[in-house]
View (cartoon, helix red, strand yellow):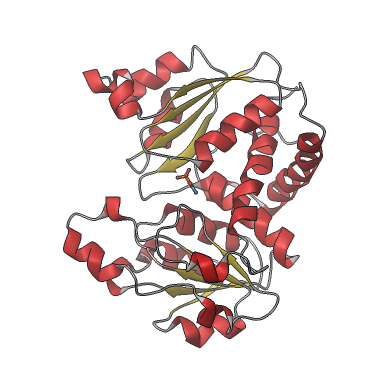
Length: 308
Ligand code: CP
C-alpha cells in the first residue's frame, strides 16, 4: 500500500495512486457495513477548522472513529482557538502536531495548508484553503464519477456557478487533467468566471475546455453537471453577489435536456441553485451519494496515511 504523507493539493495525486485510494475506499464501504475496524486504534486526528463545515469535518471525524481512532476538534478556530489571542497558524500547528498524529486543516487563506506542512512533523490534510484548493473533495468527486459513470477518461463535465472562488472546481480540474480525453465546459456568471491559471493548466495538459454562456447548449452532451453555490462569503459587496446568483439553476427543464446516463453533482452546501423539489428524487441527482462517498474516501486516506 502506498504510504501517503501530506495532502495539500490535487496535483500531487497520480492516476495510479488514485486507483489505489479508490480500491481502499471500496474496501471501506464494506468496513462501514460491518461496523468499523480497529486499524487506527490509539491514533489521534485533530480537526482544526477556521471556516464552517458540515461534510468535511464530520466525515473526517466519522472516518477516524470508524477506523478505531480518536478525534480532537476545534471548529470556529478563529474564535475558539488561541488564534483569537493572536497566535499564528504556524505556532498553533507546531503545538497541535505534538498532540495528534495527523491534522486536518480548513483555513480562509489560500496556501495555509502548505504553510502548516512546512512547520509540522505530522501529516497535514488540506480540508479547504480559502479559494485555493480542496483536494479531498476532488478525490471523492472523482470516486463518485467512477462509481456513477463507470470511467474517469473521455468524460465531459460542465462546471457551473462560482468558478472564480470555487476551490472544489479548481481541484477537480487538476484531477480531470490526469486522464485522457476529458473535456470541461465552464458555465459561470461573468463576475465569477474560471481563472486563467486553471485554464492554462488544462491547456498545458491537453484537456479541452470552453467557456459557455448557455448551459442548455451543452447539457445534452455532458456526462456530469457539477453545480456549485455562489459563495456569498467570498464577495466584497452584496451587489456583485446579487448580480451573480440565480443565473444557472438545475431544475426539471434542465434535467429533461440531460442524457439518461448523466449525473448532477454538487459539493454542497446548496442554497437555491438546485430546485430540490424537482431534482432530488431523480436518479441522476448524485449529490447526496457524493457526500456519502466522502466518508469512504476519507477513511481510505486516513488508512493510507496512518496504518501500519
Ligand atoms: N463540500 C464541502 O466542503 O462541504 P463542507 O463545507 O460542509 O465541509
